[in-house]
Image (cartoon, rainbow, N blue to C red; front, side, top):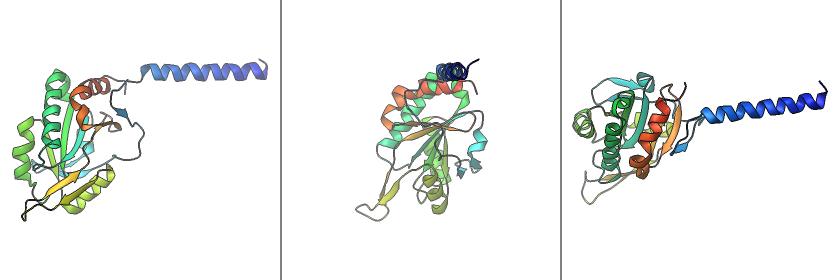
Length: 198
């Protein structure tokens, strides 16, 4: 085969392979961040008292959200929407784990989290650590949080990033989900991840 024809053939074959890969890849409504070089690990404690890492949830799609129990708006709305998504998923919900990582470890003890987080869905898990562990995991997931003083001592609030991240059953960070799109997009995206080829 002449060199020029051989090169054309290789280019054609590569294009066909890429098209085939694209056809099989799931289509997401949320922002696809597959291959991102962050959000690979966390080491915290569950509200049940057990040490937790992302490896504990391998085989499930994991929704990771950062918030705090005194949050007046985004956090409870996110958890309400995530609970509705779990209902919409039906049996697929058995392969999904929702994690809320507190950015307020001073007030969000295991006891507080154990009452708050499962109230939205008993399958949800609250995670906490000391100040250093909280900073490490927030940095790993590129989450901003900052305590803001209130009018009286102890009445502070915490400004924080509101997005959720989705990790696939193989433990890879895949999606960035805006807090205001969970109700509309999350169920479809989770189904796509759960039923995609490994």
